[in-house]
Image (cartoon, rainbow, N blue to C red; front, side, top):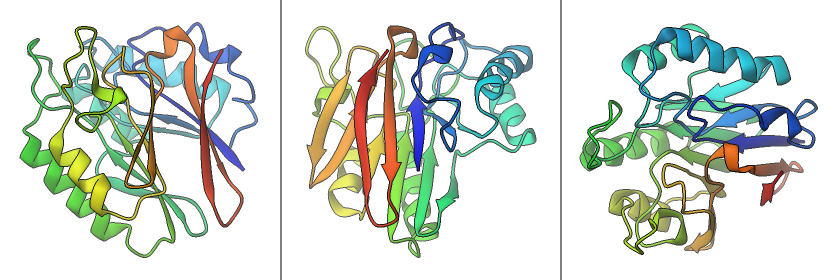
Length: 218
């Protein structure tokens, strides 16, 4: 079985139908930033586009999504932020949305302490699963996944610390559009596919005993 994961949609969905196997996947996992400071109508439109391709969607807000977007996703039963969702027996999805503060004053920003606390909660809630996938909008610090165009690393130390010490099979992240790539932290693959409008996505596979993932592009 497999899932298709991507994020940083920013209300641009043209490429999504072209992703190979997306209709046959077990579901779509959205790492955040469905909208551009959008409200309920924008969230409804984005979710509708996803569910027209695959009825099973797991989604969470990024820093560019408002509380209205989060509330709408929750109402529709697709919100994974601060939740542990079972994908298959012995496999769960841990969702953490939003981002740490940016220079742009976007609506979905929280303190790093909040993200650290949410990660601790998700760790405890998912402890019974043999295999765990972390989907987090904010990338870990000092990786290819958090490096902006001038070479600075702007990710979260708390996220990196968590990955280094927790038992995680895979991390899928986003937020930093130019931070496309794969980094290995303490044996755990961390993948940022970039903006979906650029064609990037992650294919996640589970054979019942192991999780594997690949960074793909349309």
